[in-house]
Image (cartoon, rainbow, N blue to C red):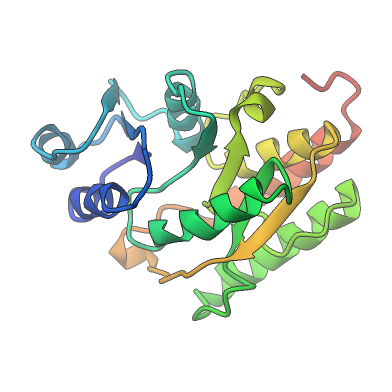
Length: 221
């Protein structure tokens, strides 16, 4: 769980994860928060491992820090806001256990959720279309937070991301390695910038550039 300035929501999300009927290893990475998040995390029960970046390095860096400490057979990313419902881990795991794929994405599109801000929605649809064209995938929600992997898949690729380009980087690299990406519908309650949403339009351009660059890279780690 990468966390940056989520003092209002982090404890509640941790509680929701802990309510799951699963054996969860919860690794939280505070990515240099400057609000009251460090104090909230320090007093919140249920965290197996709390890691701290002294300064803000970006979501991708926080995820890589957490992945370096993960020991479970299956890994999933969970943001600290309340946009996503961790109960959706259950159908995602079910799809994985039934052999659908070693990589499962939770699709907000298949879940028929309220549309977020038009620019975010259309940007996500564009990234999904571009991914399908470049990599031959058949996914509807490339930038979804809910990406679940068997740990050996992540061990098979070299992630170098620092910011929000984690999503296109990991998608591109698992696709080029030949792993099929399955999708299941998930629930989604979008928030806007005033409520703390951190992604911006420039992150969309970075995602497009990342997808194109990695598709034609000859030195793919």
